[in-house]
Amino acid sequence: MDIKRRGSARWSGGLKDGKGRLSTQSGALKELPYGFGSRFEGEPGTNPEELIGAAHAGCFTMALSSILGQEGLTATQLDTTAAVTLKQSDQGFEISAVHLTLEGKVPNTDAETFQKLAQKAKENCPVSKLLKADISLDAKLVT
Image (cartoon, rainbow, N blue to C red; front, side, top):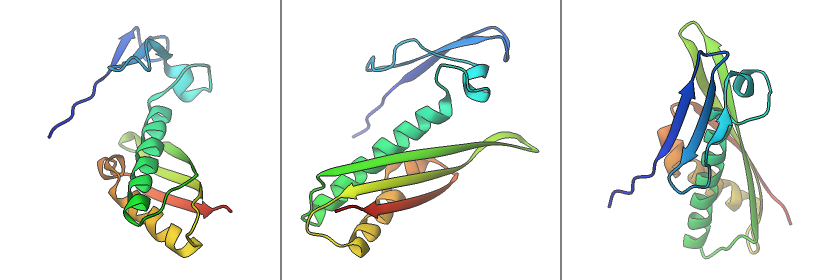
């Protein structure tokens, strides 16, 4: 089974003075503004890196939920943040790293098991497999 999802971008103008809009097939994002200022200068709007971060956090968290279920465990809460690093190198800009931070409430497990299952999710979530960046993880079981 192949599932295809689409995101789209529209851009007008030059790099620094231009304006863009991002949309998703589902309509969850519709004409969301982005541009040089929101990407590099902290101005309002979104940017590709934070969208990648949200996608990675969501994918990883769903993968962990699945892995927990395979072990007979169910989380009462999983909170994940993905910090995406964009850096400039000799070859231009690149996404060099993603750092996942996870706090989870999972009854009937221990910290060692939680770490092991979180690592498995990090390695096997489809977005982790897509990214060539170094992907790290801090996972914390809270009780």
